[in-house]
Amino acid sequence: MMFIDPHAHMVSRTTDDYEAMAAAGVVAVIEPAFWLGQPRTNVGSYLDYLSTLVGFERFRAGQFGIRHYCTIGLNSKEANNEALAEGVMELIPRFALKEGVVAIGEIGYDEQTALEDKYFRLQLDLAKELDLPVMIHTPHRDKKRGTSRSMDVCIEHGLDPAKVVIDHNNEETVRECLDRGFWAAFSIYPSTKMGNERMVEILRQYGARQIIVDSACDWGISEPLGVAKTARLALQRGIPEEQVRLACYQNALDAYGQSGQMKEADWLNPVDIDQRALYEGNSILRGGREPRVEKLANRRSMDDLIIK
Ligand SMILES: [Zn+2]
Image (cartoon, rainbow, N blue to C red):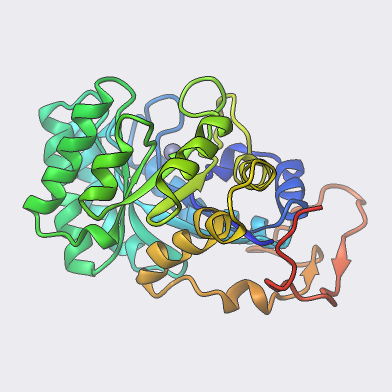
C-alpha cells in the first residue's frame, strides 16, 4: 500500500526518518511552510527557509526515494510581526508558482489576533488569484471557534471548499468541516493533537470521504510514521481497505493535485536513487561514505494493498 504524508516538516527530521518512511510505504510528502519554534528576526531568514523547501529539501527527500512537495505561506504566529509579515508577503507570489508547490499554507489563526486575520485574508485572496489549494492551520486554543471562523472567512473570500484543507481537526470539529464541503485533515501527533486510535474511530464513524490523515511531524515530539501506522492500525481494526486508501493516500492526492503540481506518475515511475547526485555542488554524503545507488526494479503499484 502506498501512502502520502501531506503534512510533514521534514527540514526538522533526520535521514533515518526518510528511510523509515520510505520503507513503510510513504511515496510522497508535503512540507508546509511554518515557523521554526522561535521567531525569525528578519525577512532574509524566511527567504532562505522558503528556498530550502523548494530546493535542497526536495532534493534530499529524493535521495531516499520520496517525492517532496511543499506549501508556501506566512504562518499565523509570525503574522503578528507586522514588519516581517510585510516582507514575507512580497516573497510569497514568487515562491507559490515554483515547481512542486501544491498550496498556499499553512495559514490561518493562532491566537486569532487582528494581524493574523489580516494576513490570512490576504493569502486567501492570493490563493484564489493563483488558483491554488489552501492548507489551513487551525488553532490549538479555542479550536472549535477558530476552525468555524477559518471556514467562514474562506467562504467570505469566495474560495471553493473543495480546494481548502482544514488541518489539525479533532472529534469536535470534523462534522462541521465535512458538512460544509471542506477537506478535513487530522494530524496524528502524540499526546497533544490526535492519537491514532481516536483516528480509527473517526474513520469508523464518518467513513473516509474528505478525510485526510497526516503526521505533522516537526521539531517537537512527533511521529514521522504517523500515516503508515494509522493505516495499519485501521486495517487491523476492521476499517475497509478502500477507506484506508482514501484517507492515507488518495484524498491528499485529489486535494493537492488540484494545483497541477502533484501527479501519481511522479512516484509510480520513480527515478533511480543515486546518492552520488549533487545539489548545487553538494551531496547528502559526508566524508568517504559509500553512496547508495539503487535501480528501482520493482516499481510501486497498488496491486498489493496489505501491509505486512
Ligand atoms: Zn505544521
